Length: 599
Image (tube, rainbow, N blue to C red):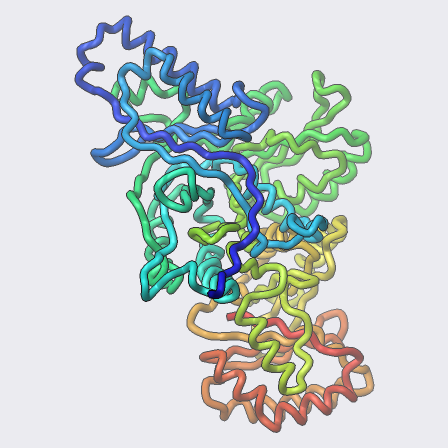
């Protein structure tokens, strides 16, 4: 009898969801002084939880749930299960608890599996800094600062026809990779915390999704219903939805009043006191990032001056300044103010790379926690940490070695004797955007950005590629995915940006990057491309292929090609014409090309 291979797992912090109903009849009948005492103790307890006064680390949040089954959700994340058990008893000792009943609860634990990386299990270091941060967020999650939450438990089906646990390891990895692609497409819109609960509760995983627009949660889950990992193998429990509110507003909630998150901008919540201490006045429509640094003030100011020069290219930038912290033991504070929260979030990625920056979550108002939007276990490989993103993963982590389909294409090309380069994400992470702006104007803007990018060791290259009758391409290469994603935020603000490569859902694309041509063959390479282009124009499924040259190096070529489907493109790769072109290319190219495939 064959026994299937289970994934190895590493456990992190524990998660408790407590769903409470309020005895509204008893509440209305209670004297005012009893109500006031209950509110006072309830606020004191919930505020202490949010400050994590009971444990070494963790997080807590309170939500008003919609529907008839529950009124409140209190979510706790703590290092140990004992911490959660103590919180349950501590709440029951409050006067507010006397007016509530526990309608439901769920216990789970954060985990990562060897589908993400073998490093945890083979005593190796995680080489990718972005992946390391993502795994840290998976094991020790912080609750995203989003307005809406959606919670549900789930498990994998064990029917005679569709039994998840009878599938080979590789098949499960492939299913979850495909599932994760959907989640990654909602990066920046939906964040999640997924935790394992086998042996702890009635289902196998808990899923908590967070978004500022609840429609994004609905759209994500609807799209995932059509994925085989869900349609064939997913089983779900009860779904709950709620809105987050500060613990201090428990009294307003019990009084039937609107809690502030409905109408107030809380994007700078958690930094306003620090801004006031620094003498910085924040306008009603402004968003701020505050970071502290232990670096020499002169060195820090010089670095900030360079960043500020880049930030000033954008109309949304209001100012970035360095301040002395009087109570910070020689620390300085960097304050960056923006008109939009998204711009502040992007700026934060660069500010965090300043020398001596202290990672103390001083900028919680901009902690989207969606670096990845996928799960590390075999559960719901859904949206997201930032991500998010792109640097997130689920079972069958694909960011480290390219998407699964990307790998299949490369294997097939290898069988045909064609070198397919290294896949996106194996050694570099690419961002490619297209602009309609005047190439000279665009290059000037990119050159300014590049000067800033070069401050960071993770920056490999940023260049502008031009063609006579095609949009201009901006290519930016980075060693880590998180750095690439941060850079993408700035690049999308360049003039005339019309699209980002890989975002066309109705076609399949391949980009041949870094066709470095020997100078003496440059003209011949262009002529040969024109001949190949004529051949391509008559092939089924071919949409467009362009040859672009680096504005600063005419021998550095970039080929962008789009097809109706993967099979249409592979038909060309299998053709004699392509084989002959590859053979010819070995003579005229200075090195082997790198192909990047974008579905």
